[in-house]
Structures are given as structure tokens and as C-alpha cells.
Length: 528
Image 1 (cartoon, rainbow, N blue to C red):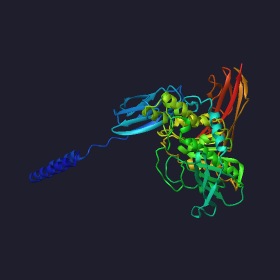
Image 2 (image 1 turned 135 degrees about the horizontal axis):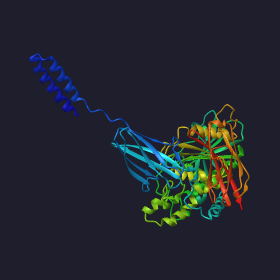
Image 3 (image 1 turned 180 degrees about the horizontal axis):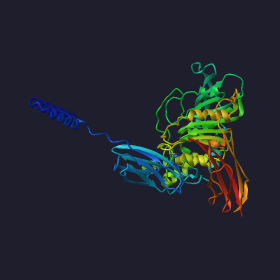
Image 4 (image 1 turned 30 degrees about the horizontal axis):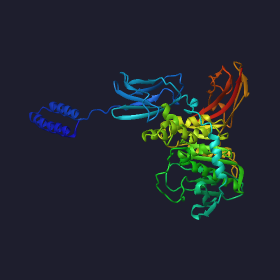
């Protein structure tokens, strides 16, 4: 009720109360008082409403129906829509009216592996819920260009003719008692230079190296003293052809051009390789342990560099860009920077554009990486959609970890930085070495023959190191092959599998604990 009405009712009460008092009717006065106070009170606020996934981990199988419980006021109306990407048509939409008990259900039968965002609205309030559907079966929308390796081999050959011309400038203001910071620049192709920082640990080496690649932006970049404190050479790169202290805006940034040789990131990737060359030229580098890491743009570049340069041994990325560019042509999400969608709006030939962008698709590079890796996704990330990042994750054949940001948009999970440090401590030969009491990640290992006969039982083994098996939930997945492999027990550390058709199969064992997944891959050739 409005404030003016409150005062009107109060005034009326006072007048009637005075009249009642004059007649001596106190009971009447009290009743009128109660009545008018009740009339003056605002209506009771509506109870809050909630949506809750039937599966607490927010993961479903394509064979299941996605079901979300809704609760709130009885008979309340909830409008909803499911979408796979903000730039695609809704998968489904509708309204649900809650029952007399204030409960209802929103449901959808998904058709293919991917991610869905449920947007529900009641009385002007919106809620979002991200959901994964058979996420370990997500693959790229198209195949990699057949000459992908040949194209990049030619680019690397060009880079090989460019001397390092390394220039270092010590910056005392960025140094401390554990590391010395330097501005770094290196020669690159086409007369360009690579700019960045290197922080060198104080103490006896040799050290492993961590190469940090930047997120999108033209702002100055900072050094990475924290990685140097851990005992690694810490190199931080810019993607721009100007100094680390500068900030410029220029129209060419991030553009894909009309063909692969015009892509802004061609010299950027070669500059990243030049930084690897520089690390291997240093006497204080251990000559074997080189990690790359980044978030968003930096995550996509890390994926590409890890697949492009065989000297990269470790990969850590969050919300990697540049994955599955062609997805938009197949009514699927495309990764940042949405080049195909932007090309369509600009009137370009999107089919031709997608072909050219295949040479810069991070998921295709990820297939070529053989080392150990750590990844993170946000289930409701509108910038680097989780389905695109999973296409890259699933293509990696080495041991890997996945951090699920089940409620995260384009931002890091709260555990990201701590788990990244644990990854370094677990897998890099830091100097001084990480101590046993310091946090390290458990390891998942799978075993089994690389060859099998069709329809014959094949024993699979799994081993969890550094943690108790009872802390995790296990699941075997038939992630690729000419048919779906048949497991005797999908949810056991050890199992038996049969292959219905001949051909190459990829099997993945996952171990889940909270928001962290460990994954190990086994490739088997099934023969007649």
C-alpha cells in the first residue's frame, strides 16, 4: 500500500477515535484502531523462488532428460528458455505454473553433447543455470585442414632465419629478494619485435620455465614474480609490437583478415615460439621443462603454442579462446573472437572464412600436444563458451585436469590460482624442489593393450596416485571411435570393454571430486 494511503487511514482513525472517545465507547475505539492499522500495512512480500538441477553436478548424459526443480509461491508462473549460445536460437522455451505446493519442473531432452544455459524469470527476476550434456563427447564441428602442419612448418622455417637479438633491461623496482626482473624484447618475423618480461629466480639453477601469455587488451603488462618465487624462469609476453609499459589502440588488433597469412595472430604465435627459443638459449634453463599458461586470449594462445612447439611439456589454461571457429556454421557455439559470426554480419563468405580460420583453431593444435595439462571452464561463459573449450580439452591425449566453474561466466574459479600453483609443484622440477608437505595434485593413470579384437573382452586398469580412491567418483567414457565401446562397469576404476566394430577408439577414464576432474586417455585399435 502506498505511503499516502497509510497517512489517510491514520487520519481517519484519529477522527473516528476522537468521536468514539467522546461517546465513551472504548471497545469501538480499539477495534477501529486494529482495523485501520491492518489496512495500512503493506501486503506481505512474495516468497523467494529457486531453481535447482536434479543432478547436483549439473552434468547429464544425452540419453537422459535434463530436469530442473522450481520452487516458489503456489501458482507462480515461471518463464524459461534453454540456449546453447547467446548468438544462437533457443533450444526450447516456455512457461511453467507452480502447483499448490509451490513446486514445478522444467525439463528438456537434449539431442547432442554440449552445454545448455537455462534462463528462468519470475516477476522480473532472472536466474541462470549452466548444464553440461555428455561433455567428454564434445568434439570440434569440423576436421582440421589437411595441410595444417605443412603451413605452420613453413612459418617456423621463416622464423628460424630470424636471429634472437635478445635485449634485456633490469628493472630494480620490479625485483625483490627472491628474483630479478628484466624487460625483454626479441626479434620477430616481418621486422616486428616481441616484448615482455622475464623474472629470474635468485639461487642455484638450472630452472624450469613458465611462459605466461596475456588476456585480450592493449594495456601494459606486468612481470610474473610469483612463478619466479616458486623456482621457475617466469617469462610474460605481450602480443603487441610495442613496449610493455605502453598502451595503444589500433584497428588491426585481433583481426583475422581475409586469408590465413593476414591473421593478426600469425606473427603473435611465431613470437611465442621465439620466446621458447630464447628460453632454450639460456644457460640457467634446465633444457627440458617448459610450461605455457594463460586465460581467455592467453589460454587460446597457450593451447596453440603447446601444439605447435613440441618443446612445450606442460599446459595450463582457463577459458581458452580460438576454439571451434566453425561452430557457428553448424548451429553450435564458436569461441572468441567469434570471427565467423562477425564475418557473416560483414557480408563475408563464411564458408571460405571458416577454412582460413582452421589454421588458427586452438582445438586443432590441442590434438598435437602430448604433455600433461590443466584446464578450466565456466558453464555460463558467454565469451569463450564451455563447449568450445571442451572440444580442445577432449582432443588432448595426455594426462589432464579440468576445473568446473559450474556457476561461472567469463571469470576464473575461486580455486584456479591455488590449483595452478599445485600443478606447478606437482609436475615441474622447481628449484628448490617443492617439499612433500606442500599441496600437490593426485595423478590418474590408465592401462590396457593398445590393440584388441572386435567383440572380445579387453581388461582396463586404472590407478589413482596421491589420493584415496574412495574420495573420487570414476567413470569410463567412449569418447571417439567407429561405434560406442561397451563397458562392463562404467563407474569403476577397473573395467572390461568390448568394441563392436573395427577401427581406432579413444577411451577416457575420469575421476571426480567436487569441481575437479582428473582424466586419463587410452587409445585402442580394434581389429576384425
